[in-house]
Length: 177
Image 1 (cartoon, rainbow, N blue to C red):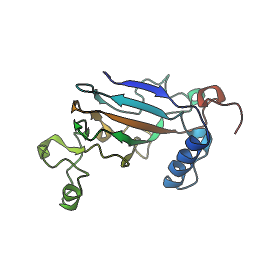
Image 2 (image 1 turned 135 degrees about the vertical axis):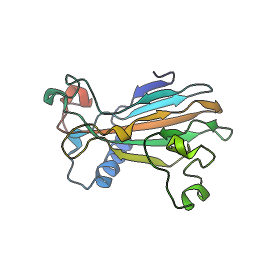
Image 3 (image 1 turned 90 degrees about the vertical axis):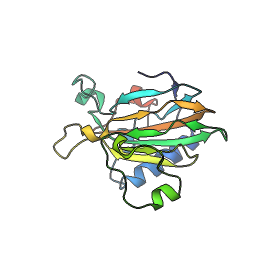
């Protein structure tokens, strides 16, 4: 499914700052213990991540002992080479925004066919946020997405995932908060 490279990031002062901002964005009521370790992903020419959801369909991955399912996701564009083409993040089941400012600002790829859903352009410093679960706890099929193939250049992205419940300290990557 994925041809890109990925790694988890150790929690240092910079990562804790990023986590604090992600928690604040979600409303301050989510404890840090619900965050998975941040993950960096690197995409070079022709690399991609096929369509997938961030919420788990396997009940074993979403068990209480594993922190439950993924409630929300951020995908931030940490670095995008100047010569990068392609590499957008596509959500095929979402409706395209009706306001042209999304296109004018370069956030959404308006050259894509609108029947292909919405593709967010890889713009360094931007992030896409979505909630993975419906109010009843089921996975939201509209969050199906893909990292489209990079056709030139490259990008580095960062995943920030929030779980329903606290993660085990060994999974979180540290002993004490």
